[in-house]
Length: 197
Image 1: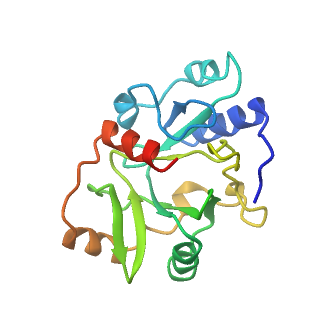
Image 2: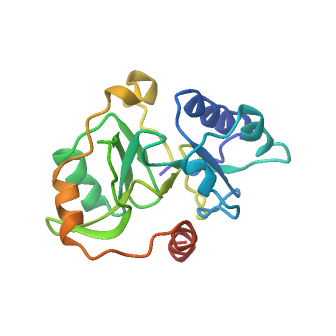
């Protein structure tokens, strides 16, 4: 597991490159998972390059990727090695990120509304869906336990445009329809992120 502290400027530059792709990013304090600022506006509008640069003005920072229709992406958060292996084999995508306990898998947004949902049971595996109204911690940010959110060397995000990502798997929305709705407002998402530390 990679525990080397990321350098502030490269992390910032990755966030800026994602912004240039039309992906909405938000500030998250260094070595944290929850944003301390209101980020609702960034579900409907992109931050400016100047704003993003300012998040690193006083030192290291993490950042988040806002999922949903604005960014055009949906993510599956597999929070265990077993769940990550299942998703990797069943729903492969070139955009993945190693997390502290599992992986994030990023797909093209299918349009319409896709519910953000934590603790979804898919074929016996617990998965979190980060879609409209959600976010994931961005690549090369630093987890509270010191692990870097790392893009696998054999799957660089530069090798595939977000427009060419596989569509969010249809099986997941069907599971979402059968699952009771949960409170996953931005404030509640922050609570969940803090609880997982």
